[in-house]
Length: 123
Image (cartoon, rainbow, N blue to C red; front, side, top):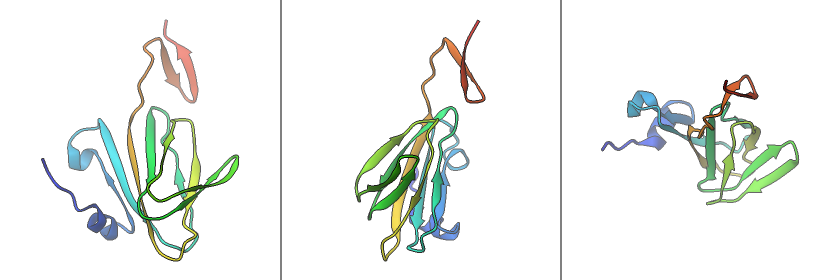
């Protein structure tokens, strides 16, 4: 078992670090540790086809900009993000906010395959 200084790694990479295959030598899962500064810049959240993520606001609230409007994700709260969902997160507080995105390959129905954004039955 190995320990990772995610806060230090994120600082060295400009505010966000992806703990994934290069560190874990496995592509079964990944985790993004990030810090949003209070400058209003939005960060996109989009797992992509074949992946799902859990977004957690660690030490402060995040604003989620979705198709349905804005929602506040409070400190210590999390949301499940499906492969076809996308939105942006922002920090409107007066201090940096840490967030974590934990992801993995989505479970697949063996009767379908994904082509682009469409699910097509296997023959």
